[in-house]
Length: 117
Image (cartoon, rainbow, N blue to C red; front, side, top):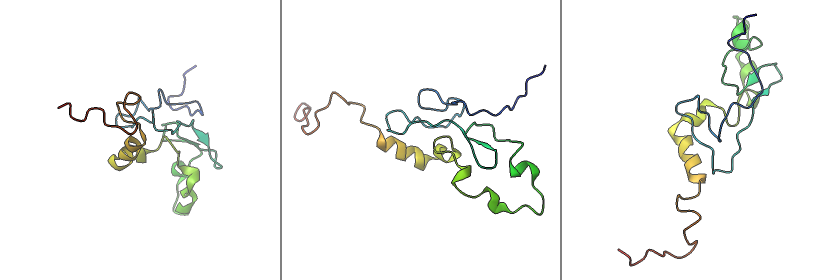
């Protein structure tokens, strides 16, 4: 029996708070944002599995009579596996949520390196 190449699944697709299969995906590690697994929306389409083709998707059965608004709304956007996270602006937002590299060895209110240079 031949296994389908694009089998959709709601299994977790991340590893160590990142998407290793996406070259420009950011790391959510240390941001307080937890990677979320894929979910099935009300149209029976799996969102966030990184397989962008689904037999239940209106994109696969599009006709001149299809109302484009059917694909509008949060039901079509995954909170952590969305192409928007790959933009430099959103990656910067994630970087700002991370603790500094020196954490936990830096003093929270005193600059202990003052005068050492």
